[in-house]
Image (cartoon, rainbow, N blue to C red):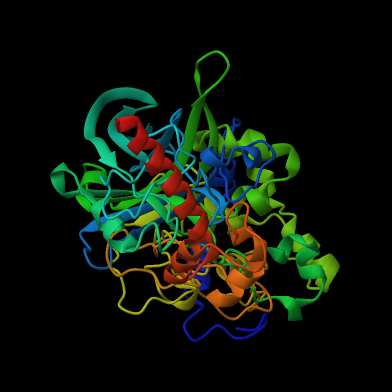
Length: 512
């Protein structure tokens, strides 16, 4: 797709739904002002000053959709730790031990979570006398060569009017899928992932571990909106980066209101203890991009620290958004008239007749109608292109939220028809057809050869004297190391092999 190309037939369905709601008085002034002063939160890829320095606690994205292969269930995917470089050793990427990772579910539209699935993690280390994440090829999650492992518990909290009613432990010491160190370390990563999928009582399923970052977009938008040159869009900035994912699949009946109302609101948060030992919320995410491009700098940290039932203090950021004004200044595309009540209806309340719950309290949540069956052929623009099973009715992994959100922000629903987009229409990796659906993480050994090299032999030649045994002269090299390098096909394996030989010699000597 080019930045201004047509998006396909049937894309007016969201406009029809929203305009109908406006005509019926669905955005009466009383409905908009019902937001009370308070605070709210969301986050995405380094979007706020404080959380950008705390990646283990930083929510990147939330997805919620009726499971395509099990339509009687809903799948929620929440991601943390943005921009994980696959080869980022030696420590790689773990969930924080001192955090509470929460998935909130509002099943009656009151902007309060009636259900909270709380994930807490614990890190385990087998050998502290090595720098290695793993000390040999890892073939299972309980492999003795996997030096650093994590497990997690899940508690289900039931609340009423923000007060705890009950707490039930639904999982205990579940293993986490590790970071994908590389082909030498993890020759069959898919097997490790499968072992991290865990069945819970009542028909639920959980997964925690590393995954390919499913968000696709051209992040150069922050370079003064592509520097005024839309011919340069189209590069998936997140290609090749990983995230840490929590995926939860639950029967629809477990998360719906007891009366059977099918629409739920979903968001995730992270809490950590402050200097006084009290749990403090430091990150939250529901709808994508809110804290990145809707909230100004002065509100970002406040937004991350607060809750959806107090979203009123940020209402002006939605009704008088900055982004259309910037687009007008740079690209001369006239900004729609304010106040932008159309954005309130879509992004804070849900679309009437689609995913707006009765007596809704406007708040920043990802709203999903669990009664709408998944489609066999999802359209990337979701509801905007006639596919009511997609964004903003929840969010599927394949939904192009950048293009859909940009077109709505630029007035698609109030008569300013447009086909704006960043020309990144799909993820770099194909998603799975079964839980946890996210693509496997990019391997740490995926790197290209150095410039000018064409084979493993060239890499060894580049290393030159580095491969000589101590005290050697001339052009000779250690044949044992050369053989190991040839077998591995990458210079990185030499470093691991050297570390392993040192460690194993040391362990052997200790034994005697």
